[in-house]
Amino acid sequence: MHLYKYEKIWLIVGGATLALFLLVLGIGAFAMGQHPPSDTETIDPQYVRETAPFDQPGLKQIGENEYELVMVAQAFAFQPADIQIPAGAKVHFIVTSADVIHGLEIANTNVNMMVTPGYISRMTYTFNDPGEYLMLCNEYCGVGHHLMGTRIEVAE
Amino acid sequence: MEIIPETKPQKKNKVNQAIETKNEHLIGTFTFVLILAGFILLSWLGIYGLYVSRM
Image 1 (cartoon, rainbow over the protein chains, first blue to last red):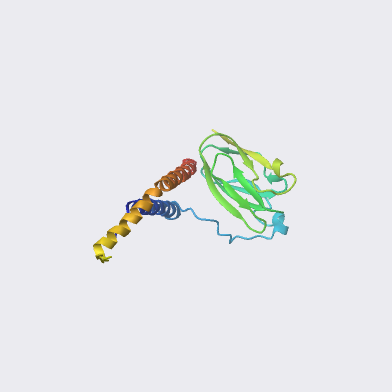
Image 2 (image 1 turned 90 degrees about the horizontal axis):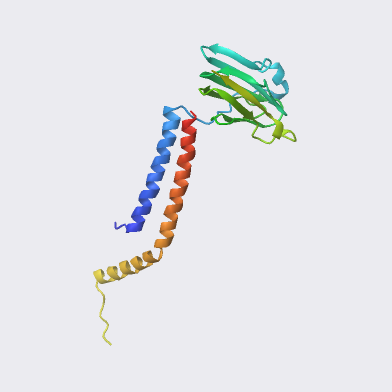
């Protein structure tokens, strides 16, 4: 079968791009354990404040430099606010919403997730660099959305 | 007028020449698309690199 020159070039470019993206996807999924949220953890949004662990939101140490941060997103604030953790700490975020859909993003990190009423969102991140990190709601949630945020202070 | 029938190699040569001529008209489009694809690919790799650097 005869392939013309430009057709050959185009097939090579397309095939190589496809192979590259499949490789990145495969390494991410199988070697690094990255996958989309399963949405299997549910909670009654009307009883968030009475359901563990959200009845006691806050930072809890569970291991050596390992923490669990239970948060409730509610218009227009995150609870708890102004969190302090040591540098190098591995933090497991466990978040839900008590009212509408919110987002949770920590600037300059990979922490970025939807916080949906009725579901529990989980994410783990290690804060290696000390400093002040801005935590924002990045999903429009009402008239006070632009004010919804808090800070995480990572101390050495 | 005498009609000389074309042989198979002659017909194929004519078709190939026609296709090659059309290919020359599309070189600009082809180049533009490759540059565009390269730009998109580089942008994607840049953002992915930023993601990996924050892990």
